[in-house]
Length: 158
Image (tube, rainbow, N blue to C red; front, side, top):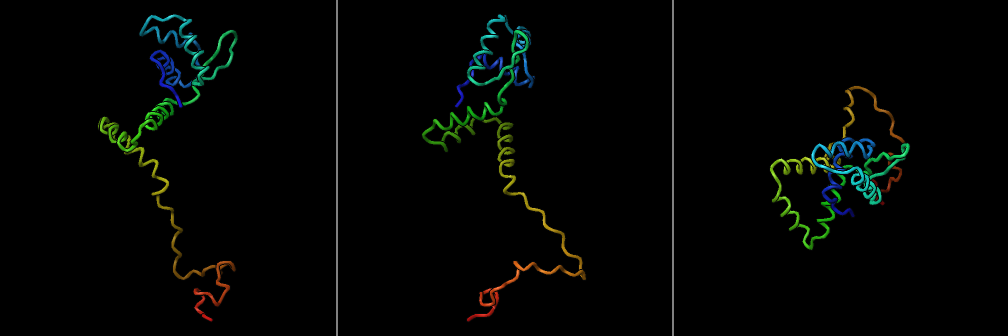
């Protein structure tokens, strides 16, 4: 299970997830420098650490690498929630406490998510169109006929 990302790791991964494409150290550095003073080698080390931890894959491009996220931010968040929930000795109580912390917007997102998860079970299956009156019905295939006249369905007891 994943460990929570540190502050700088999260800042780097946020850009990788947001851009949703392979990125270079230089691109991440330039974006981070809009918010803080940071060295190229620091960003390079963070991306290398993220690669070693399995958060990003990298591909050589000349003398540098391009880094790409292995999974989505949503998958990361879900894994963290699952890890935290599995640490509880009372899963139901943990969920009740968690739900109690949610904003109305988060509760609506939860309701929507539950609806999506349940959708395959609750979606009615399309029914074949009713036969128009007066049209001949095709003959029943042999496997659909009752071949055992002594069965309860056949109506002929022994």
